[in-house]
Image 1 (tube, rainbow, N blue to C red):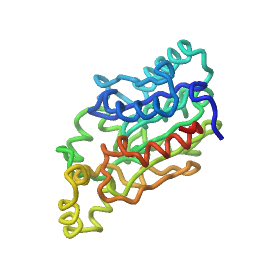
Image 2 (cartoon, helix red, strand yellow):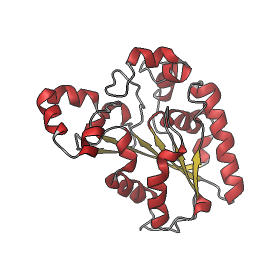
Image 3 (cartoon, one colour):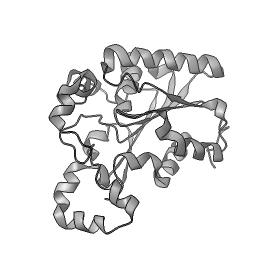
Image 4 (tube, rainbow, N blue to C red):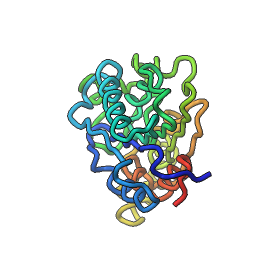
Length: 243
């Protein structure tokens, strides 16, 4: 059911090693769907992704959400998070009082159950976990991951959606083997580059109690997800604002 596109502000949250600019394509599509600039926000914490998810980033995000609510006069926001951005935003909802401030939480390729292997992003999994606290928080055995998944993974009244792809799943790459890799390299240049960044498994992104959407496309890699038309359509459908 459609609603006024500008009744609830949307907050986009980038991942590790990124900045709000990664949302330019999706934000443009939101404007085409009827959203105004005044209700589209992108949290910029590019210089803070090394910090503790629960002790530092979640309170910072809480402050940002309060500023958005004050600026817009809204009582709740919708959140669209990519990758690592899923962790501090989810902690905020579960442990920081955010469940009363967040209507929808959408996690695109979020490491919600942690990471065990990565491919094609120029960093080994061990280097990621030992680089800083933010990296360590993404380990499947970390305190943050364990606490987020204790009890209910999706506390009400917030509604939860996850979006993942076979092209982002390292385990899917292992199953395909080298023949699929050769096939992918013969695709278009954009698909070829997308297929190299396999970071978060489908099983890690999915949450019990969420609307878990999986896109079956071996060429749709980790960073390409937030520029994909199918992902945008799913996001817009979840938010209930028809184009």
